[in-house]
Image 1 (tube, one colour):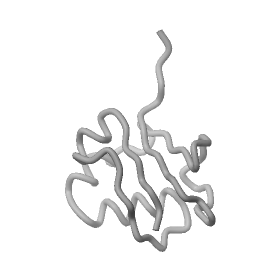
Image 2 (cartoon, rainbow, N blue to C red; image 1 turned 120 degrees about the vertical axis):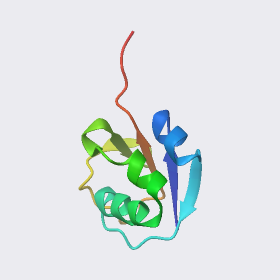
Image 3 (spheres, rainbow, N blue to C red; image 1 turned 180 degrees about the horizontal axis):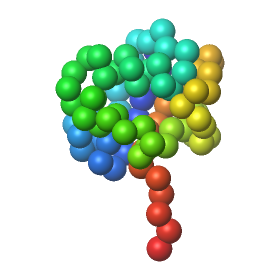
Image 4 (cartoon, one colour; image 1 turned 90 degrees about the vertical axis):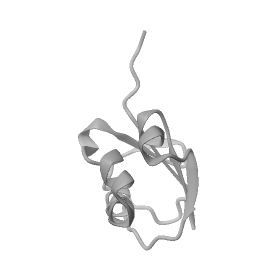
Length: 82
């Protein structure tokens, strides 16, 4: 099981701030594919991965980083300064 967190418009499109997911995904990209296969709301939220960032156990990572040993995956739009 892995905790998946959603922030900003990703959370709005999916309708959840977080969920526990049973997954066999090897990378965040694989996890996204599993989620998109579930329901249209995930497909909408993950339609453009270039508009998203991912963090593994609170460290910014690449969508092709390994998920082995990771307990938490967070998806969010890029931060903007201000």
